[in-house]
Image (cartoon, rainbow, N blue to C red; front, side, top):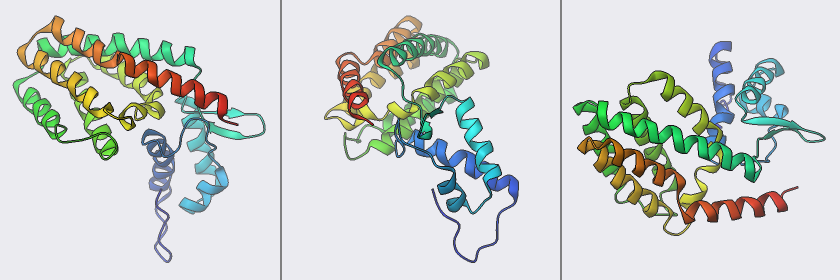
Length: 231
């Protein structure tokens, strides 16, 4: 998070409140703050040059979004799921995203299909390791376009909420050798089916993409190791 430059004018309370609220969310989403890491009120107060009131409000909103919880002796920490919890949430995402893709293949407008193709093409030169942040951003845009293309606001909102719970974990597969390439291959099949109006093919491609096959099993093994070795 960027600290306010010395000598600059304080921002209005509303603007500061929004920044304090979005700062930790952004850090969690990008993986700079990882599951199990502490979020300290004092640090946020110093970084944003605010009192504890807006910071505590931001912390309450993070907790309400299930992004943080309170651990005895540690205070607020980024939520970390058990293996069972993660599997349950991922399974829900698998079903929701599959339905989004099916509806998008039937309902997406030509303009949105063109935008979907552009976003997909922007990822073709990206490689694992070097382009994790850029690929993660492009991946989020691609999935958001599919949610919007389903033309079902309720479904899109529920899917975003479930995906948000997985944000602290979603970059991990991209950091492995071949991770971005595997994800991109899944996008190729998915985008092709949506552009062709193949509802069944789009649903199957999305669910296969979200499940991740062996990549998901590797991720679960890594998560188990991290949970066992974190304080």
